[in-house]
Image (cartoon, rainbow, N blue to C red; front, side, top):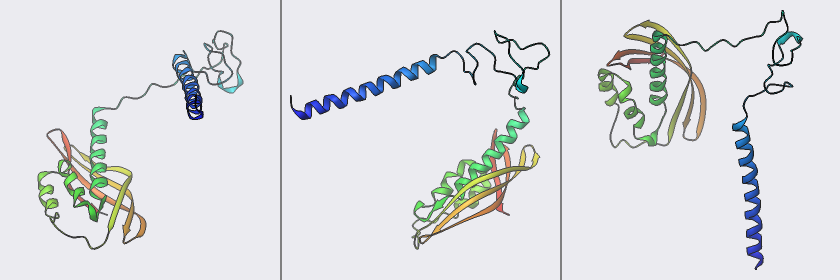
Length: 198
């Protein structure tokens, strides 16, 4: 057997051992019945706050308070709608204000489904086929804060704070801006009707 074959077999065996150990720990972790937080044994309750002792079997001593986690609160239908309006504004601002000169107005095309037909008529006029860029420029926008400022279904107004990274001819500038978007709900979908920089 050549040296090359022996090295290959040795490396293969090492890899198999590592995979076997990883698989063992993965199966063991998934099969664990409960997660403990400290020195308690599985099946025992965690030690109560304030230094109170626990009784074997997980029961708390008389007079001690055992903390109970509150169940997750369900959102109301109105809160779900408000979240949908905020999310629609966020997606629109991030897509519309993230572009590069090499992108061929793709940022505008991507927001067609997010805006009303009236706003789309205005936005598509900005698309200039065959326009040659004079040097490279780009803008990346990330929404940091979304605040619902007016809520009158089926209309809403949202203010957004964004972090911008602008690159123009190799020079990078970072900044922050605020935008306001007015949305309307039509056919069950929140769409941007207008927007402006603040």
